[in-house]
Image (cartoon, rainbow, N blue to C red; front, side, top):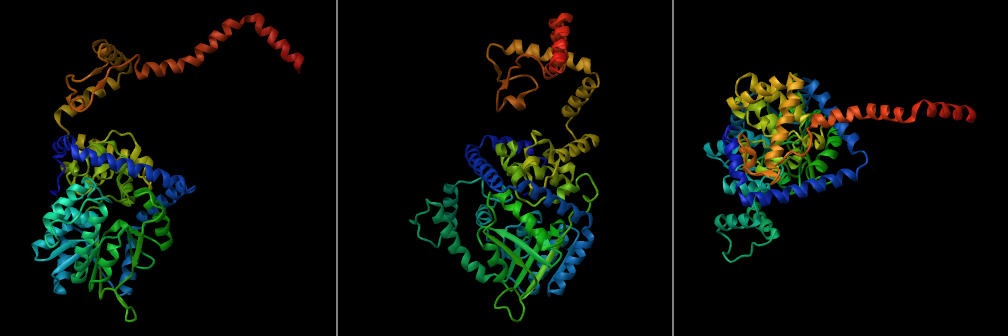
Length: 500
């Protein structure tokens, strides 16, 4: 995937007309949303855990340099090697150098968004290495030559018939008449192909959900066990992680893990939660002979101390996109780079620049669902507004958008004129559309009406209703006083004295 999001609008139009994608996304949103809600409701302390997780990451980010140094010291004390990489180029070069040092030919990989950010597969192939994705979703999209559509469910945009077709085309070593109608059959075939890949691999590459400063450990969470095989069978294990993944202690990691799985897949805990600390020791029966950690910055240190620092709390659970109406409509590929959904709308401009990704912060209804469900309480809408402001300040927004904002500011600074204009507009639209009750087309509104009808305004504007409700208590009090009259008030006062 090209490191650009300028094509978001065109991508979105294509996605909206893709009937198969629509069906896949409909299935996705129902499952993830319901399971998260059920898992959160079963844990009385879930909201308190969210606060604790947020505070842990805030403390870590305020002291990130100290915890990174402690983590690196612990890794090296356990026999591992840390590679500090400021840029994607440095990280890619470090991985290739490690592979060449052991004469590697095949590399197995666990699911890693940092590897996607580095476009690591393409770089390995360009240097004569064969990368094999071992996560089932990642393996499927690797066969198709596609990037992930979701950060925890890479192939969520596909149905089982598409996967079966790809398996038949690529797995020619199996009988052509085999049955591949059921998900279990697809999983069994993928397992049969991948088993030998694990044994043949010279190097295994994983990401990391957490890096523990206290012990120098990396932690991955999976539901397939592929990560365990990837990091334990090859003679070299490479962890590729960004600098904000560090947490102070194992206890801190455990606290955040309690909200991670519930927010991501609705599970109490992922099936596999695996810790790795250095290469195997002499007394260990298995494990890698070498353990390397690629610590990537790639623009993250510039986010520290800025209005976007809170984004570094993200634990890649995917809850924000699972609940996002925009993501539900267009899917992940429309976003044009590695990170889709609300978290991508904030993180992508931070990493590749608002010049390249200016459309993404605008791809939001600002309904606030992303912030409401984020386990780390990241204020995603607030940060998207910051990016919109920067886009406007740098004159990057389209002329029509800038002209519209200038016009809106003119009216917003003049409340009486604003109320008159909106009231007049509501009245005119109501009169024009009263017969049908909706608009299927209207000037300057084709972006909306191309895919949905615009309801006709009914009754008063929001400001008119607000003013009415503000005035209502005062008006009601006056009416009651007039109805009661002086004589009624004297009788009530006398009654109160008698009661006393």
